Image (cartoon, rainbow, N blue to C red; front, side):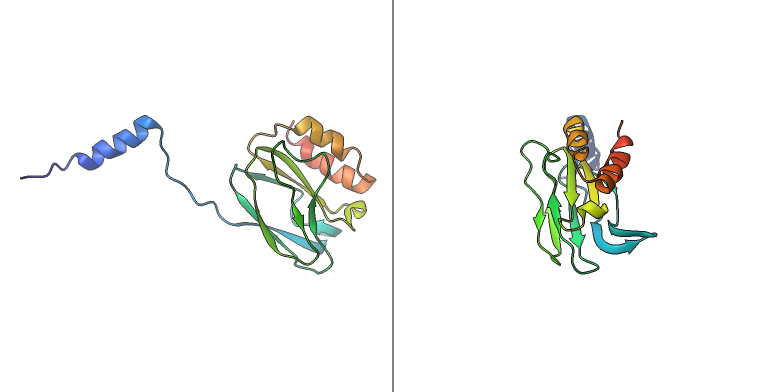
Length: 150
């Protein structure tokens, strides 16, 4: 019996017609915890990071004495808090859409904060409200980062 050479085209057509997509492995994303970066002290390597739902970030303690912890009020509904200890490298997978605020607990007053936006920023108003309650340098850094989402 002779096999049709058209079956691969039929499979491709079925995939396109049903909207099925194959998983794509996103490049690994890292946020470094730093004492200095680009003339700033006590910072994460990024003030704002955009991800898709299901993406992961590895927090890397490039310099010692830092941690990564969720900022109260800057966490989407149903999301798990980020809570990495001092000098601890860890990978976090973000499964809920929204804005996640992250701080280094001893250095938040010095402005060591970052925002991670996963998919649509569904909790943007609440995140801005929470950012407005932070110490001045942290507030300024986060609100400037979140302004790009307006």
